[in-house]
Image (cartoon, rainbow, N blue to C red; front, side):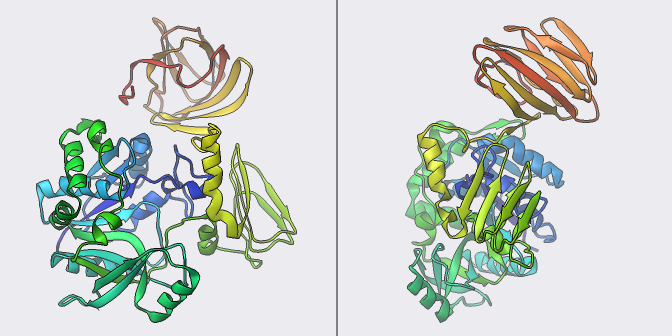
Length: 473
């Protein structure tokens, strides 16, 4: 049995699923279609394949602790978690993974998967992987072509060529086609010769690197330099920032797949969806008799064909249809279902206006737990803080604010200056401005606290760290 190494690409931002997906918590880390995140589902659907090795994750450096925690939650120990200092699209990310795997075994088979896809027919997915592995073993760069059920204009297409000799179920690639207009897409689907481009691949590490050397040596050189200068950081591999940021930003399709003569396509009918917009989630969700898909506290009356997601409070809708409504603690999105592809325009406006709603939620995740803004005003703000058992915040100091901590549940070990104290439920303490302090949870259950900050400046960048077990600067 030939071992296959999953390479999970988790660097996207998912702006079309705003306001739930944000830069600090993108869509692949969210439970959008099940109780697990899209990333967890991506890894878990490989669990029943004995030929699968531990996954190699490539992700944004800012998401490292959340990804490590999500893998722990599903009892998965990654082969490595590689940290990108900046987004450079898929070709450099795959190149780094291929270089890592090839140093142990140049013939290592790589299964490259985005972290944010849905696959409904897992058995068909597994069958397609095994067909693609057979093609890859013969030196081909295999991609997965999704059997097109409808004439979609939002996908690129792959045209199949002649059957691949000695590999039943795989075909040579006759060409890649950009996103077509509707009439062209209808012709593609009717012909039976075109498939949606899934962005999933399977090939030998050495074969991919050979093609990259021929087609885009600049990408290969920069990726190799970034990996050669990488440093270990806890359980992560931190790529060299200068080398990686100097790498051209290019997709693997443009860099390699559209130009190589070794491309093969494996058609797959596996209920695939790349969740590119809120309307895609409506399509795959369970619906009521009126076509409404809901999650959370939702009340509907005389409403049909809506997608409604309520995160923090009740959403009531009366006499409306074909809407997408997404409620979070700080934003409510209301859109026509046929306009949700333009959600990115709202995100672009938030960036231009230097707002923060596209960056973080009210609840902000940290490696030790999370904090959530409750209230704020002139010279004060109130936060709720959760610290996981055995975790602790950095030893730190603030120049502009003092803090009052109140334990709601659990046990807190507090360092304040030279003193250390143990606080339990309903006890509190005061951290004066300019005093070195640390918060730790020595117990077996989550620690929940209320923090009241007061001072002339309350920004998160007013933190001077002296010690930090997570090695944050």
